[in-house]
Structures are given as structure tokens and as C-alpha cells.
Image (tube, rainbow over all chains, first blue to last red; front, side, top):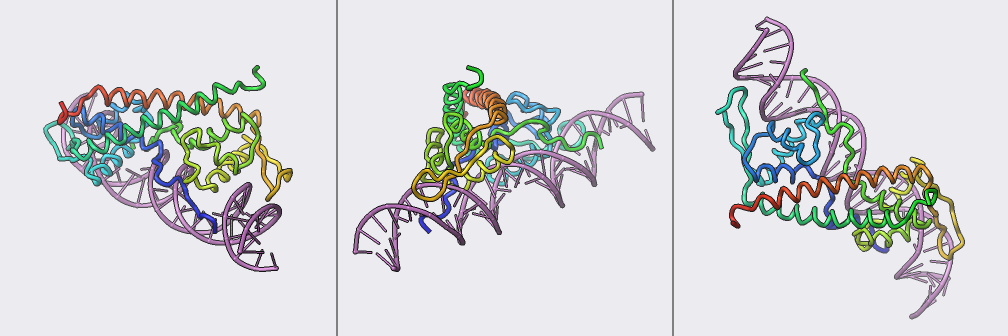
Amino acid sequence: MPWGGRGFGRRRRIISFLQPCLLVLLRRDQAHGYSLLDDLAEFGFDPEFLDPSLVYRALREMESLGLVTSEWSDESLGPQRRVYRVTPAGEEYLAQWIADLRQTRREIDALLAAYDATPRLDKV
Amino acid sequence: MPWGGRGFGRRRRIISFLQPCLLVLLRRDQAHGYSLLDDLAEFGFDPEFLDPSLVYRALREMESLGLVTSEWSDESLGPQRRVYRVTPAGEEYLAQWIADLRQTRREIDALLAAYDATPRLDKV
DNA sequence: TCACACTATAGACTATTTGTCAATAGGTAA
DNA sequence: TTACCTATTGACAAATAGTCTATAGTGTGA
């Protein structure tokens, strides 16, 4: 065959928006999953419709990658909390992620510009 | 159970960047899959690494949704081409998609702003 | 005239990511 | 002792993305 499959190669996708948002919040201050659930509203997540398991899963996955660490804390009332904080590796990773998002932003801008440059025929 | 799963609810995801890009290109002028492969470079896709099957699949899926229509054309040399064009429904859908991307852009901006506002401790 | 390259489309399969749903458990207040 | 809020986890299903292979027409050069 001439070239075979190629996919997107090295190209990173636009999403996994949740994880960088969590890292940015944790960078400000260590926190536990349940509180982050509300803090995410800052980035457009509606706490009312965001399933907590998505947040917990994202945190555990980042921990498995060494981007955050956690420890149990029972300083508060109610059930124990797992408190997360960002590691130096997490800082590095986030920096890349941010660079990626800036690129993504440029690509979205390119699409929006192209859209705006071609007026809809039935509206002219 | 108190609330049960909630996911992101109605929230549309950021991706499927490919499909809106294709619609924007087709809105400019009808085209066939293979030529779109190169045109996508405008939006940051590297034609060298973009697997053609992704483009064809996206086009067929959009056709099944009634966003585009296609017809065979053998006006050219070489194998037959399936030429696509946008339907009014596709126009409507794209308009929503664009609105969505503007929102996405705002959310990315919010994240970037939050990131920039919190200097990295070990670099202060 | 055969091999090869290029244009063009399609299908099957895998992997990854997202989203849903249910379970568990400590504490408080009625 | 029931109901409710905080808090975390796991299993599973659905959707999306990515890889690889197959097919086929046409032109070019050995």
C-alpha cells in the first residue's frame, strides 16, 4: 500500500479540559475533590450537572501519572477527605497543557475567522 | 440515592473539530474528500499525518445527519469522486457549532487567565 | 504490459475517552 | 431512625478517535 494509515500522528486533542482546570485550581491551593466540584464553575462547568465521579476519576488518573499527590485528612467534620496538591511534574505537565491550549485557541480562531469571512448565502 | 449520576448533562463537548472545519470549507465551495484533506491545513491539520479515512468517515456521518449531500462526479480524470455540498440543515447546525466554539474559546480564555494569574512558586 | 505511483473512497477493528449509574460511608438534624 | 449532606469509589455502557487494510481507476516509465 502507498502510505497506510496515519491518523493525527503526534497531534494532541483539544479536550481533557477537566484535568488542566483541576491542576490550575490545585495550583492555587490544595483541595479535595468535592470542593473542586464547585470551584470548576469558574471554567464553565455547571456544578449541578457535573458528575462527581468524573472529577474523582480525573484526580486519581493524574495521581497515577505523578501530577498530583494526595493524603487523607480528617481535620474536618463529616467523612474523610482526600486532599490533593500539585507535584513539580504536574507543574511541568500543566505548562505544556497551557501551551497546547494556546495553540488550540489559535485554531479555533482560524475557524471562526473563516466562518465569518464567508457570509451565509441565504442571508446576504 | 440523593442525586445519582449527572455527567455533563446537556453540555456539548469541545471536539469533533474536524466536522465544523469540513462544513466551513464546504460552505465556501462544494468539494470531494480527497481535496478537503489538503484544505484542512488551514485549520492546523497536517495533511501528512491526517488519515484520509477520518475525513471520509466524518463526511459520511454528516451526510447521514442530513448536514451535507453528495453525488458522484466523474468529470475528472482518475477514480470517481463523491462531491459534497452543505444543506440548509447543515448551515443551521454549523451556526450552532460556531456559537459553541465561541463559548469554548471563552472557557479556554478563562483557564489561561487563571493560569497566568497564579505564578509558579519555584519561579518567583 | 507490468510494476508503480497517485488519486479516491470505504470498511473493520482497536483504543481511548466520556458519561451514567449504583454503592458505600461518616456525620448532622429533625 | 430516617432523611439529607458531604465525600469517595467502582463497574459498565456509549461515544469518539485512531490505525490498518482493502479496493479501484488512471497515467507513466521501464
